[in-house]
Amino acid sequence: MAVYAIGDLQGCYDDFRRLLDRLQFQPGPDRIWLTGDLVNRGPGSLAALRFVRDLGEHAITVLGNHDLHLLAVAAGGGRGVRAGDTLDEILAAADREELLAWLTARPLLHEDARLGWTLLHAGLPPQWDLPTAHRMAGEVQDALATDPAGLYGSMYGDQPDRWSETLSGTDRLRFAINCFTRLRYCTADGQLLLKLKGPPANAPAGALPWFAVEGRRTAGARIVFGHWSALGLRDSHGAYSLDTGCVWGGSLTALRLDASEPPVQVACAVNRDWTGMD
Image (cartoon, rainbow, N blue to C red; front, top):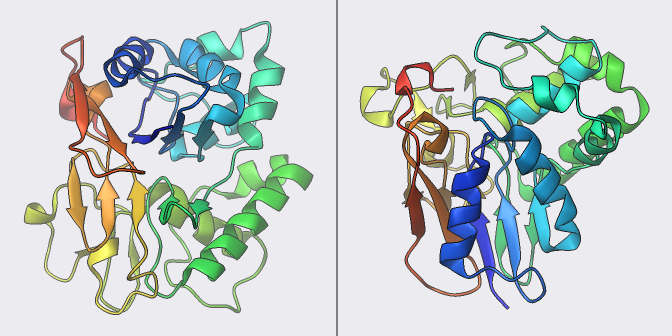
């Protein structure tokens, strides 16, 4: 049995299947963890969504910002379809409701204590320990189950940008969603800097990768995440980034979690434009 974590697919279905072939992935004994953003921007979002869904218990995926965007668009909430989106095929599919129901039920955080790894899409604020992260993921998932329309209508925005246990209602849920699905940078005292996207070498003074903040309460945990294609493949402070920009012409990366092996990559089969990275 092998367990692999794989970076953001974003609809790069053909590249995903080539990577699984390289890994000699067998759904019976093997498992894959996916860092979220199964869909959008790439040409095979519907195929990717169906394939991962059909893997059942052999695949674990967390929700990313593009996955939540799809759910919001399908529900008629949020900001609607954006330029560059490739969601129409899913929205028009005969099995759309089954696929969307399956996607809605995906977690924002997954931890396997036996393996010693935690999976998420973007980041965690330095004030949270893992129990707090689990609790906040559960609060968002409860809202997705009980009031999805209300959540989709209120989840967009950059405020609040500081954690407080006193946050409540939509502010509390929005903060959590922004951490799990959008966070890259924050300040040393934990203020989220959600508009920053580039590599750390280009970051302004005072902006730190979320995993590099001194004293963060998840220090010591091994975390695998995606979302940050400009960061690329990196192992830093116990956090392993796997989004290597396949949808933008880069590569798709897999990391074996149950054994010490070099990462495996396949190059994107299509030369795409990197200028729209997000």
